[in-house]
Image 1 (spheres, rainbow, N blue to C red):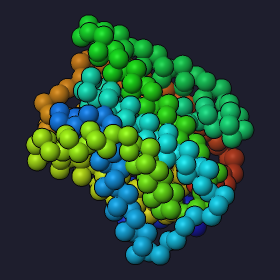
Image 2: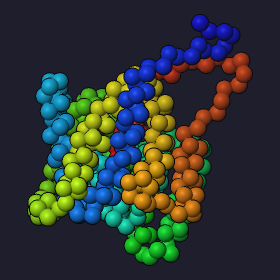
Image 3: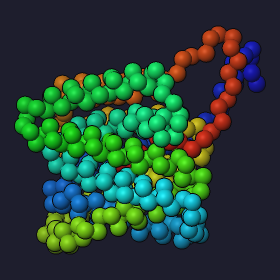
Length: 319
């Protein structure tokens, strides 16, 4: 029941909230698992191992659900996302995390949503709101602060920040292709076949994977399998479940918690904590994303119409 022009609060879907929480926690844990597995696996081999295990699990889910093949119109988007998001992004992130700690990587990569909005405005003709441009300036100022904070630790650390920026760009480019592709494929089909194409793109590293797996520790290999099964296969499934039961905006906002979780997890499991200046730069990155996605509150007495849910162009940012 409504009072005046204020809409009644929507009922909270507790299962959707639980699913979204699982997704964010698993995506945050991926940064820590990558950092740990990277001690024994090179970036390309780690990406291939993750994509192979993820594709096997997702393929099994598709068979159980009888999803079938996507329509022909979906394949260009699936192929683009597979190469950029499940291939190039994974390799750049794995490489970057060899040079910087997990928390710093998460802070830099989390400018992905603002890049997605920027690319969406250009490629999908969604326009450029003034807040988007302001947020972009704030976020990139934060990335510059992170880079400067790492400069005292040598060129390799600065290179790690640049690789994480490259990961954010390739992630954004891949995700932008998801929005139009979901008109022709289900989220599970999109994720499964993009993951499979990502594995194909990483096949040149098959020799490295075989050689490194023979010498790697059990813990490192289990981390590779964990990355494929949980942050890739399971987290995407819980994300799709939650997204189908709530608005895209609310789901997108849940990912803001990921960098804080990564910093906490990397401190607990790896003994790594970014420096104060690095954390300050990361906060600027997140603040820029918040500014870019903020909207003006309606004036008092103005009717508020419920927004129609639509596929989230930024929510598929798996880690």
